[in-house]
Image 1 (cartoon, rainbow, N blue to C red):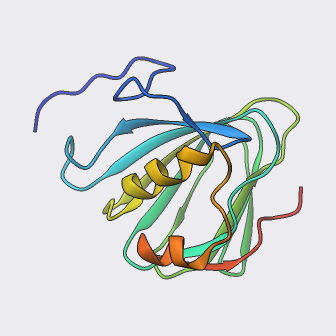
Image 2 (cartoon, rainbow, N blue to C red):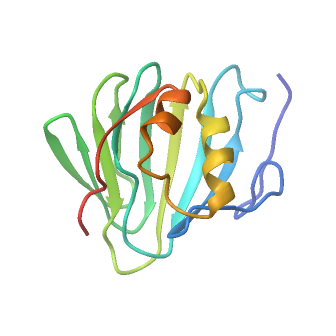
Length: 150
């Protein structure tokens, strides 16, 4: 492992990764730190991904700015800056930015599995990940339902 520094507002590889209502920046990738992916997701509009689960990844959400709602299993959480929630593998979850200002979330996948490849694929369309079960299945996830209404 080597030391990796990524400046504020920058992506690990200097790339732009749009998801329509948000952008993501890779901060730590599996090749940097044995199998972990950490990204920063910045929202300029309300919304989020569809309900899904990860077969092999635990996902940790840390709110940096704005307001988010997460549902993990049958629990609902409202996150403000400094709050965090873990969505364990095999547990359905869905989340959305619901604030009127910019929202920023730090998200960690452990182990990373196919998540880096998933984000590289969906960024090609500059839109939130489509509700195509085959895409989710190919990257170790199961699509379970629509995004949260915001």
